[in-house]
Image 1 (cartoon, rainbow, N blue to C red):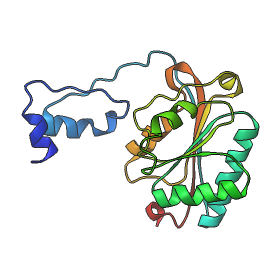
Image 2: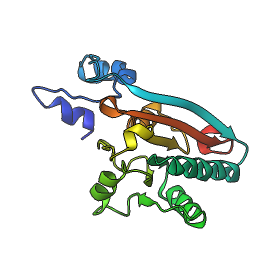
Image 3: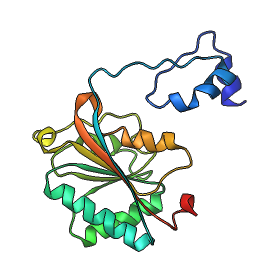
Image 4: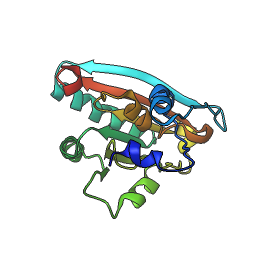
Length: 193
């Protein structure tokens, strides 16, 4: 049975997400559900720092490590999203070589996921995660982080669906907190080929 047929068996169907606007036509066509935009509880202070595209993977990873180091020195926590477990482990190796302490959050840390997410908003913390890990969780900012600029999020590859990218970027700047995000990609990333 498909998800669509399964969900249609409910008498009442509703949901809430921060990324439904772009799939509104599909929700109407499939489930006869309208999408209503609800204003945020507090004004959004999330800053979009744009996208940078590098010629090679090596240049991209060097830029990611350099950017993470800069944010770390400012005392800002950094969350970096990768598209695969392999990419997250590769970045973890690069960070270890650069002497940057970090936490790795991918499909291999199921038991520790909640603790890693709780710590991700602490001053100077670096968290490397697959984009699917930690979804739907609220990263609370630690003492002094708001004043330093909040959580910074980096995407190392973009997705076919911008909705997944927006879910990653949505980890920063929640509930009126400051935060920023950017994408650092390479020309030979799968999506850009």
